[in-house]
Length: 81
Image (cartoon, rainbow, N blue to C red; front, side, top):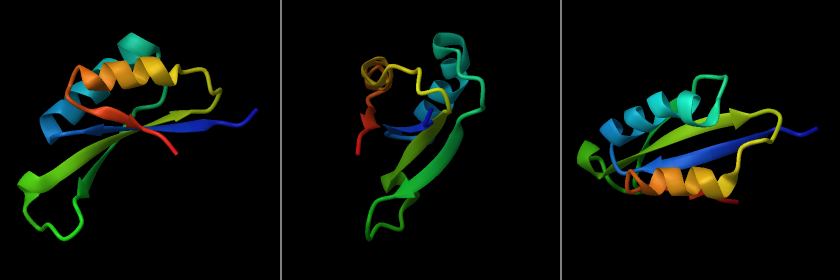
């Protein structure tokens, strides 16, 4: 069984923190999600940074469409390969 890594892209740190806090209750995520600042290419200004919430899904049981809809509530999206 291969695990999956889901990456939710959020517009700012506040949204990313809210999403990370809500994930365990809403989706039963066992591992704490990682927050990563993703500066846009060529931009040094923190205001131009997106924030990523990385969710490890070792059992590949999370629904990508549901995660995408959840991220959309915070003006974000689920990054897909």
